Length: 145
Image (tube, rainbow, N blue to C red; front, side):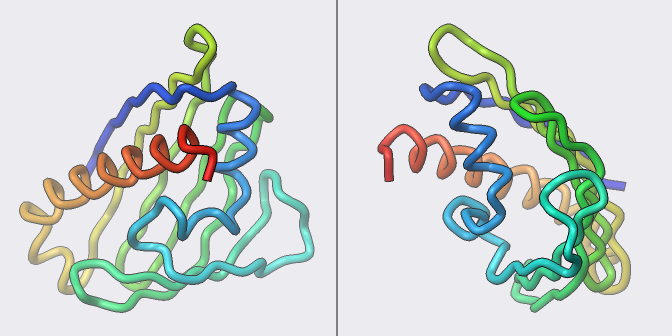
């Protein structure tokens, strides 16, 4: 089992950060592993909504299903994804911090197949990748792009 926690401060209001993060059409703008995402159900964004996702990790193409498991507007957003042999779950919390947002993410992953063999190396790479993703998110939102 791989676990990680990441916290960043973004100089944008909570409402704006939450709206950007939960609009999964923006995912490719800040998540390095995400390549394509499309709805898998007719359910609007919220708990139970599902999405087909395609991505890449350590040079391996992955496809799977992402399900929204927590959704509290301007407060919490959580998902669980099964992509090939890897299962990942994460919860993000959004809290006011001055005029900006304190964004925290806690997650865990269960690698299988090839990824299970590389679990030790994978743990550090995933945490580093998520830190890079949060830095990219901060940059995109603060630049207004």
